[in-house]
Length: 411
Image (spheres, rainbow, N blue to C red):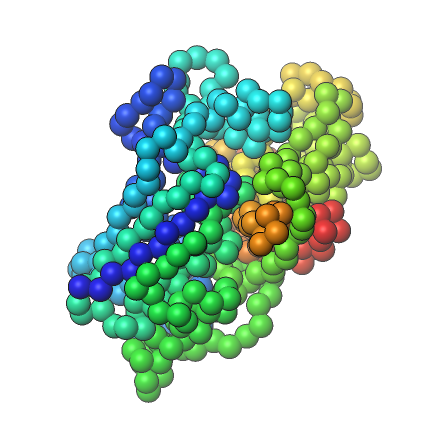
């Protein structure tokens, strides 16, 4: 049996709660093997369209047929056992309750950690593994696994470390980690990402399909035309906030914060409020919803909710009848007509520590469709739900514009 060992060190708090045990008013920290496997599967899916057409298998086209075939090979399926298992280990006394962050003088944690704690009531909060703590992931492979398949699987660990992390809020910079030592791992599995994982996957495809009959290879430059799911084939990335003194400086800059008057405070808030919503400007995205609530005027079907590109649902509360006022107005924007639809943010933030002990952020944008409903021009149809009435409007999938706005605000 072959084995790979990754000794890792946390850079930012890693939020992952136990399903069973509590301590005081918090859930205990637990990073479960199944959670790690789930993250590995997500990033493998993001990688596949960089190499092959996910819909083309054995000469015919069927939605995600090749993707599902490769997923079954890499992670197992109902018909086939997984070719690897893994364990996660870490020491004692490595955790704190998120309340220690929420109640600290850094007020942005209230927004950054929203959903992991409860200000009122008795529901327990998450706990987190503190920064600069070690944890070890051991992967054990079956004897039948192809050598190149093992290298692809091992490379996913460095791919995750490069763009993401483990646990809740990983897209927002939490759960970031560095690999401090790798044992039993081929040298070409831990190179520059995502080019390393891409080249290894291409090598694996070539061994599985030397005659190029099973898969259809793809060789195109990454672009930002929205795909059916998040993929590195439709992505841009940049390093930002270089030479930051603390990981907290990065989380604070990239967390939505507003003044009591509603004005944006952080870089992220300026992107979402000023550049996308046009808060306090002509064309404020809230105005059609305000009219729907107070005047019963249906928004135009051509109205584009610009902020929808940042994730759904969007919940507006306590807006007044006139701009700049508060009141009883509420509205929800969703990609389903009953407000149950969800679409995660397309932006992935990971925090990294440089050799000089300064910090920087890596920001990855992966373009994917925000709604399964499309109009006759293949534009995304979403719904503004006001007083229980779903009004069809248009979502925003202009990821090139978002990328340019992102660079302008954050770089």
